[in-house]
Length: 495
Image (cartoon, rainbow, N blue to C red; front, side, top):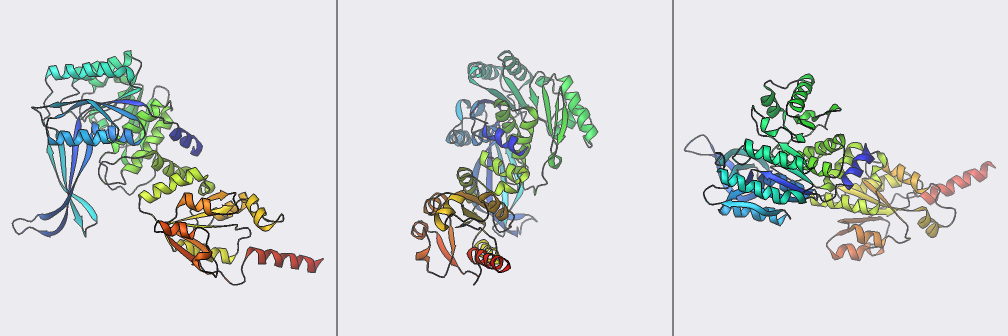
């Protein structure tokens, strides 16, 4: 599974994905909620900032762009300031908004969330204020959307419909778009609106309801695995779909196709906010299927992306590097700590984006002893992530002669991988570590010895960008060379 998911993530490519639906602007108003109003028993929000994010179908487009796809948007926004903000936010992420129409008589849909910050840190939603018109769009606007759809469809690799039931995806428009996609040989994925009648989605390729939406569609509550299987089978047959993916919160996702059905569980999460999770699932499925992943692999990847998203605040995007990291955490073996340099640099970029401090040290670590253990513990005390540059067998022979190393590089890497103080290991061939230090650019460079920082290879480079250099004390009398010499002496005495 580990290799399969990594390969699938690496093969996602840059498909053109046509996104049709209800485009919204999410507004987050942050403030400190430190007192109760004297006028009523409600919190007083002292506003400290405002943030704008993509919502609805715009969230799907942003998610697709973050995954490396090329989204093309069809839909409407108001001819107002909010519409301008939303269109610019999408364009700044590389999304094609040339088919996003601005309507003078219909405002941009906005969902404004008031967020209280307890102790300036803990975000808590206090209230949501929606501004929207949900009546069906005029017939002529629907015809215009269908015209744009016909023009763009030949260039698209796959289609996503994101339906929030705010007027665009009427029964007629939905059915026309599904028919046109089918005739063009394009897969069409639908994230449906909550409702009792899903006939308008008939003939789509994939439907992705959550538990609540699926329950309303089939007319009974989905509580058990049997309920889920029955509901999926009902939707699959009645709507003539190729696949149904029912997302089940902490239980994962249930996949049903004409050939197979399976519940795909997910890792238990500390759920921070479920806003946008369905958008990420839809986007990941679309990119995966466009890259010819099978349904099982695509849902596995969508599960992973959705799990990452719910640990973030608000509707947030997920990148491929985040997914690779999560796959390694979930499915990787112990030697997942050992990374080629390119993969390591991607991982460290992900870590830096989250504010983690990178500590780097290097060495042969030929015969592990107490001195090594205490030294690596001192490295751990310097930051969040400890990276060990491990001399290859060739570089050790160049440094110490043909009799070393005692243990080959694979064995040495495996031993280091078993230590909790070590996060990642990368091998290097050069007798000097300087070039590796320049590529990793650690926040903290650590070396063991009884000399000053001027004796540490790379110290000038690290300090040139504000990094720190630490010389850690060695345990007296403990070294690989001393251990090896003692073994040789004992061996000679017994002969």
